[in-house]
Image (cartoon, rainbow, N blue to C red):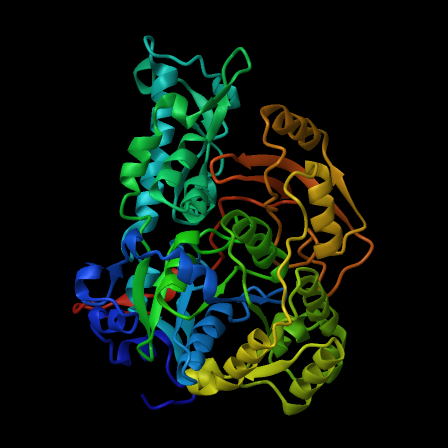
Length: 562
C-alpha cells in the first residue's frame, strides 16, 4: 500500500485498505480455518484449546506504555500496532494484542481507538462499535447479577436478608451518561421492588470486565464470578454472588466473550483484541487469556497498558503479571514532543508550537516514568511518536536527555509510514531483549499491609510525600481486613492527567499528598481499589461529543470515526 502524508482521516485510510480474509491471517499463525470460530469474513474467535503454556513461557512479551498524556493521548495504540508491523518487517513473527474500545470514549472524546494513520487494526468500524459482542455480554452478566440481587430483596421465601443500604454492586452500560451515576430504583409501589439508591458505572469499569481480563480459564472465570462481593446482611454477614447461585448463569452469558478476537493490521499481520478495562479506574490491560494466546501463536507479542506508566504499566506489572506469571522481556515508553511541551507549560492551542525551552521544562515528567520503569527492572526504549509539528532540535534534545538517563530514544513514524517507519524502533527493542538487560520484578509483595502497599505506589511511582486517608476510607480499610482481603494487590483509581491525584499538577509534581477518598473492592477480579481525589466510574460527555461529527450513508459507509 502506498504511504501518504496525513491528508486522509483514519477511517478513510482504513476503508481504502485491502482487507484479507481472516483465514489468510490465521495461516500466518499456523492455524487453519477449522481452528477459528468465524464472525463473518474478517473477524474470528480463537478457542482456548489453542493456549500452549510451553510457548507462553519461552516467547517474548513487549509492553508499550507512555508518559503522562495530554487529553487526546500520545499514541500508544498507534505505536503498538506500528511496532508489530515493524517487527514483522524485520522477520520477527509478531502479533499485537490490544484492548477493545469502549463506546463511551468513542462517542465522547476519542471518536475511535483502533490506532491511527497507517498503523491501525481493521475492520476499524466493527472494532470501534459492537465488534463481536463482548462488551454487551459483560454488560448483560453484570446486570443479571443486579437483577438477582433486587429480586432476592423482594422475595419473601428465599430472602438472604440482604441490607439494601450496604449493596456495593452497580448496574453498567457502555456509554458516558453522567445522569445515571446516582439514581433511585424500585419506585412505583411494592410490585416494582424495594426502593433504594443505586447507580450505573461504565461497562469497562465493571468488575465483570476486570474478571474477564484476569481469568485464566473458564473454570477460573466461574470461581471469580462467584467471589464477587455484593454487600452485607442485616446481621453484618458478607454476601457474595455465589450465595445467589449467580456464577454459572453469568458465565453462560460470557461463554463466547472469554475467547479472544482475531483481526488484522493494515499490513495484513495478526492482531488479537480482547477485553477493555480503563486504566484510571480499573487495571487497564487486555485479558490474560489474549496475551497468553498471542504468546502461544507467535514468537513476539506487543501489548499495551492504558494511559501513563503510573497507571497502566504499574497495574500491568503488579496485578496482571504477578497474578498470571507473565514476564515481559522489554518495555517501550511512548513520548511525544507535544506532551513534553504540555508538561513544559504549553496551553492546548500551543501544543503544535515548537519550543526547546518547554521541552526542557517538560522533560522531568518523562524522566520520572523512565525511573519508575527502572524500578520494575526495565531499561525502557523511548519511542518518540512523531507529529508533523516536531522539530529536529526538539527531537535531538529529547534523545540527548534520554541518553543521560541511560535509555535509547527512537523516532517512531508508524502514523505516517506504518511498519516502514517503525523498523528502527523494532531493531532497538530486539537489541534490548537480546542483551538481557531487563529483569522484571514487582514493586511490592501482595501480603504487605494495605496501607503500606498504597504508600509504596504513591511514594515510588507518583512521587508523593505521604498519603492521607479520609475517615470513611480508614473504616473501609479495616472492613476489608476483617473480610480477609488484605492480601490482594492494589488497583488505584486516579486521574490520568497528572502523576499526582490533582489533574492540574503537570510535569513532575513534588511535595504533594495523595488523598484516598474511599475504597471499592473487586474480590472476584482479585484487587482492592482505592479511589483518589475526585475520580468517577461513570464519565460524562464533553460539551461537543465526537458523535456529532459522525455520519452513515445509505450504503452503510461510516465517516467521522477516528
